[in-house]
Image (tube, rainbow, N blue to C red):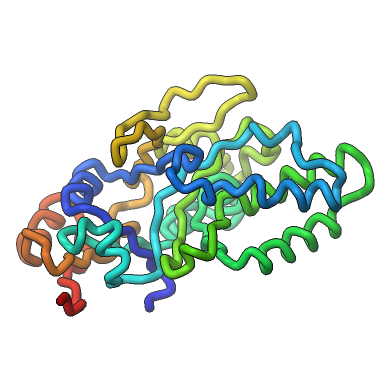
Length: 282
């Protein structure tokens, strides 16, 4: 397993669109069919017990969008469920592509509040223990602190907890957390005398922060699996397509061969390694 890569399983047509448009779709997690993907009800009772509250005024301020990936590069479960029943592809993505494109570590810190890879956690007992420890360590015994700590718990865990029933997926999410401008650090000075500005960077890659009760202009809607879902189109151009996409594995039943896909990638400026799945199908 390559620890620097994660893998997105999808249809071959989606791969072609990703390469042509140089973008990923990050879809709204609140519109998922799986109610365990945004487990507010899991965190609420812990907040009630330790902080005395189960809701916070900051809670509605964040929206979560994600691209679903996995640590498994060539996996039957994922090819069946997400790779068009072996007719699709597994796309190897550099999980450090955001960091690699930023000028300093400080930039990664402020961008990472909004956009980063998150490893999904499936062990509810372990996650509950982490949440309890965090709340107890940061709670200062007053209402302001309680709201702040509960918000922090939601922000850290709400987009990365999933039912143990799905643990075999070993999911990793490229997650975009949309903020209402509550984050204080929005720019940092660079060594050349210029500034790295968070809002400018997010806009350059097709994302946007909102103001409280504000309007977002870049969010789109599409019918995915017969359901209307909101999404952002994350531009890969500022990161470099070859820094983002490192490999493509064709499913055993893919109608395109390795040479054809490789030619398409090269024609569109992508030099990712192309192979065919080694899985043995019955």
